[in-house]
Image 1 (tube, one colour):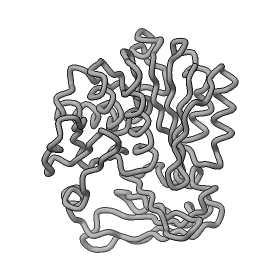
Image 2 (cartoon, one colour):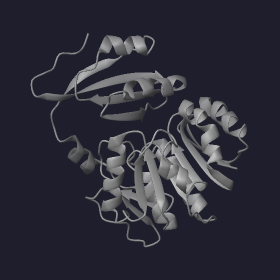
Image 3 (cartoon, helix red, strand yellow):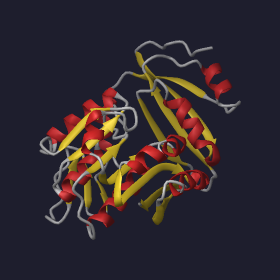
Image 4 (cartoon, one colour):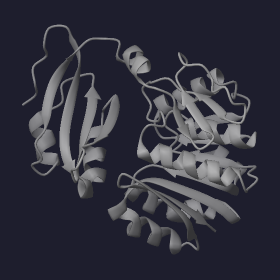
Length: 287
């Protein structure tokens, strides 16, 4: 049974409190058809609070059944300019030398920082989630000791990581996502950051796009998606890396590390770095 619309409501929110070992599965179910998705830590708890925003009322009973009986709260939300409000609330983020800010905030005064402007929008990725933040820390560390010429942002979302690579290495970056909204948002963000000549965004299912095939092999691939898709992509991703190429993987929980690491170890990659943030992992692997 769906929650009936309330007067003046345009959006509906589904909220679930889920144990950490089920976060990946719960996220996949809530994200289907959602406009946006948020993940919040609950202090002193082994659970996380997950919120998904929809433009039509979700079927609460169907969600509960799909989630194996986890309680689901569905509520109508007052029609407000949520993007503008979130921009006012969100402070800039510093991840190593990357400085992520909304357009309403000034650049960092230090010229050594990589300035990236990303406003709240429809696609995932403002740098606030542990997975994106972990990838930014990994890229900052890599930029201090490696030269990269042909990087890929696989599952680019808003394009934050593609923008970060273009800033750090001043090289062409190929960004790919299966979601056309994500591709459009990445292109817009590249324009707003003056990086349109360097960042090319394409719609692709995994690595299935001519642009990705023609530009391979790559010396750096960043994939911030979910654990099971990461494992399934192990063979084509490994095959798209040059010998000595680096892979940055995120979107997985600590309990999913073995699944992902074994998949890529079987393709000849070894782990050389690991970033853990509030139960989420970012893995650095090399071919």
